[in-house]
Image (cartoon, rainbow over all chains, first blue to last red; front, top):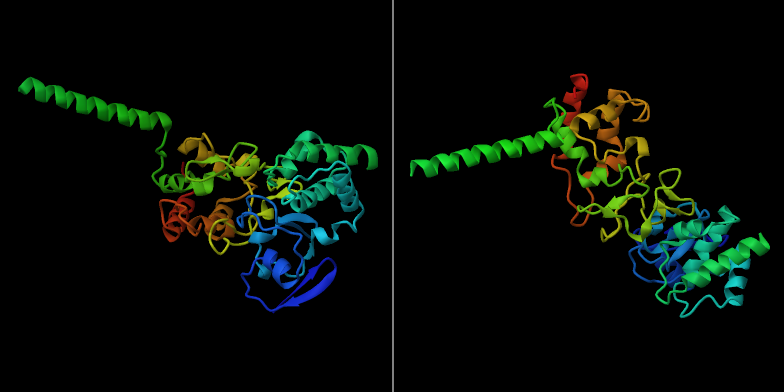
Length: 152
Length: 183
């Protein structure tokens, strides 16, 4: 049995210790906003925040979560910057197929919380692990700059 | 017949000499035989891939640049919001696809060993201005107990391990330290 704090709420789940956090979120807690892409921390679709740091939930065993705070795409809009990111994503129609976008939003939110005026290089460094097969990178970059220049 | 044999012999001597000179030129051999086994371990990709002199880590035995253009970052643990720990847990993942160990990260630039010959690496290793102010005893502790160092012998999957076993390596480091760290 493991008790983890997700989006401010404690959940107790009866799962094996090596079950990846992603599958606890999706199967046990029915939080399906975080996506399964590669299962090997190569694509970033499963990105959640662990104590504020973007983390690949597909390779994080439940046993490694402990007391750390997990935040997912379902709750990120309740944060000021997370809300701005989601609104701007909508305004600029950033997603195409959308599969990677919850991970992109989690990464972009963490970046803007850490750096209120990121350069193109800062964006590349922070989001290089979030892959988009539709190639929405120019819009992602544009949206991050728009938030930084107009709202932060 | 005799001429042919003589020519072959000359060629062999020449090739041997050239080969040996080449090794000497690259200083693949430490002057102290006590450092040689350490050099062979420390220059293995499992160690060297994160003891780089670059702004990024490497991966694989071919030592290619780390996928996803991962960067060193100011604290040697990646970009501020794309830390090594975003993917690398405290242990290898269940299927070994992603390696992991505690405090996964790059060694500081001052501890970058790429391009150093055996003698230079030995000096750099002992230089307290470069090695995190470690004494020989501290180096022994680091190389025999640090969980990230130990990971090199349990890297998971088909990743190769250093040329000496971990106990043999500790023995070699101990012998080198006991002798005062000769280079």
